[in-house]
Image (cartoon, rainbow, N blue to C red):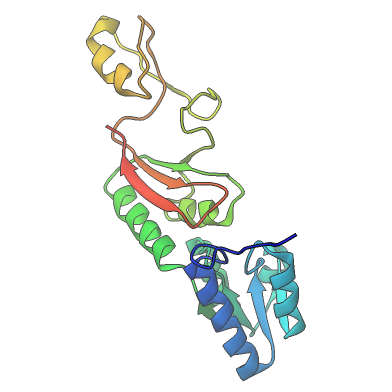
Length: 209
């Protein structure tokens, strides 16, 4: 069987490529380096870097490190990670993807302005954890873009006025009609941070109006 590879779109995203390059340079320079989490979701590449001296640690092991060189991967980290690094005298090599960094800055800014942050992604995904940390872990995290799972967003509008007054607002949320119901399916004018799967490098931000 002949296999043709698409050289223009296959392979790792630019952020992960940068992380791998920096990891290789640091390993050549120091001979040893810790990575907080897998550098990439690819067992073969992780094994190759570990053979060069990279040591992958989870959250528990990271908190126990002292006076060590640690790589922050392209996925980015919440502020708590950098606080632990300072307390434990860790030397951080930060390779957070520029796209992720921009999203983190935007999240911090809008959270300070009073916006409710909604993150579209998996709660356990490292990018989601990193972005949620920018708003003190107060984001609403959803996995279903159509808000079809009621457990993800629980918001209720209670008013002494007629429900008809709020029909325009309710109908704008996910295109649903209020049909006399006072239950809101989404937070209006909230910032949505979208992390699309399975390609977590495809990230965008938009306003829900």
